[in-house]
Every structure is written in structure tokens, then in C-alpha cells.
Image 1 (tube, rainbow, N blue to C red):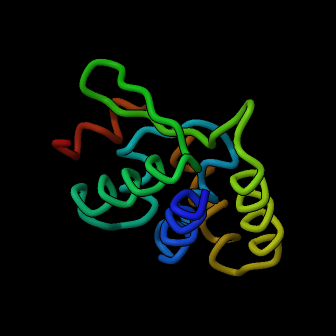
Image 2 (cartoon, rainbow, N blue to C red):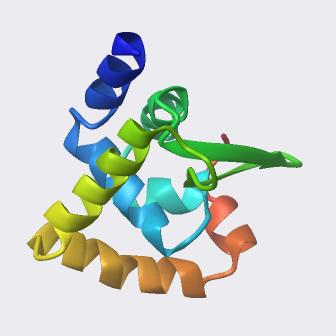
Length: 121
């Protein structure tokens, strides 16, 4: 149990991972969408997402060559639910989260194939 908690805390210990986690509140996103939002190298975003998956905050699925991420749902451990609620509450009035929400509107409105053609992940 302690190992799980420390993984969760580590995953939330980076602002970019918190932004990525917050971005998934609106639903599933392709890795390319997260790359576009965070404006980081594909390998960096992939590593961030890997840590969020290991911490059980995020689930992933592969569809062909694309990887999609979403918030962990269903029966998650109590400490995961608390962590997700903390992110939600903390970012409610955050200016960066508001900017990300606007950017996500544009990203979600775009065709996945159009966004993803820019990246070789």
C-alpha cells in the first residue's frame, strides 16, 4: 500500500503530468493531442504518461499505431479516487488549467489523423 501511495505522489509531483491528467477530465485523448497541448517532445510526454499509468491514475489503450489515454475509472483504489478529486478541486480556478481547457477545445475539434501526422510516436 505504501508503494502505491508513493507512486501516486510521484506521478502528481510534476506540473506537466498534472496538466496531462487534468486534460483527460474531458475524456480520452490520443498521445498526439497531449503532445500538442503540452508542447513537449513526444518521448517526454510518453514518459510522463507511462508514470501516470504506473500510478494507476490513467488507463491506456492502443489502436493501431496510436495510443489513447483516459482517467482511471470504475473500481479504483481509494487513494486514486482521492488523488483525482484533489486534482479536480485544485485546478478549478487555476489560470493554466483554464488556458489548457480552451486549447483542448481546439485539439478535440481537430481530426486525430491531422494532429497525429505531425508526430512519429
